[in-house]
Length: 340
Image (cartoon, rainbow, N blue to C red; front, top):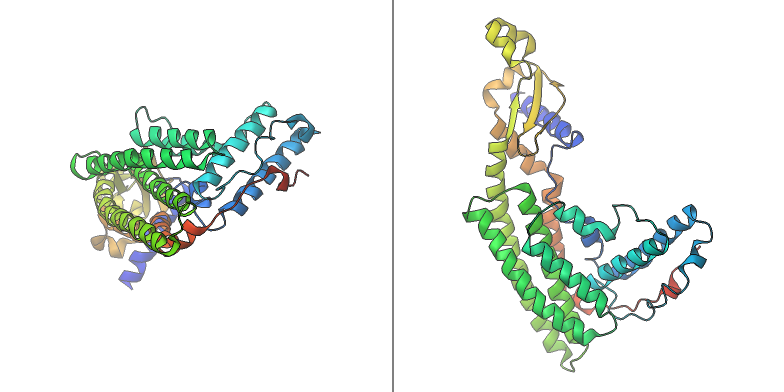
């Protein structure tokens, strides 16, 4: 009975934290996730179709306004994975400029802003941004794209190692830093897959090279999965220092100890890192108080936090699909997009 009550209380707190935006965002951005799978070409076409439809609903005859702005987006090779993501950014930018207004901040165009926000200095951010710019510059030059991919993925790998070590060994752990690492690691793996994809197009030793690329990428994936577990352990310890479960009216007990009996059912979740707290919760757990603490809540939060499960699933799914992702390819043609 006590264990059932304890779990019910912990779930009550976790639900309150979720609804009060008290769970930090440490996940991989949804735009990066969207273009990480085997249906990235379809995602690109559907996304751009929706963007144009949305603009047309606000600006009559918008398709005519585009004119020749989209003429460059014909027969673009390797429009999958990061190629599709870069194309989405380029197309959304072109469409929004032609319409003289910016798209929703939920669009792929604002992925970097969502992930890195107001970060003043980030080597991971700078390298990802530079690579996406290079991809857009050389859409029609696969050889140049491969060269830029190999050059910048090495630099990104080094930055991710520095970032990881700063969190694990230099007391620099934070929700923001962990989010930068998870997105950087996911992006780096997609760079490796894109490089392998481009190399496979210029080799006759298909089977041998495919196995080589798959093994190489999975070795990096294994490292990132190991790093993620270490980082999450460190992050949990960090959150135990920032999250507190308390009585919002605990000062009442100082006036008269017996008054705690009338307020013991009132609780709130506080996170000093986020500088936020939940609304006051009402839950009678007087019988399980000896078995409860803020650390117990954080343990429960990490065991039941959907975003952590999604993070682990992302890397696991990528490992299972590495070969198929290397082999996938598609050419993008703006003429295939439905304008109305």
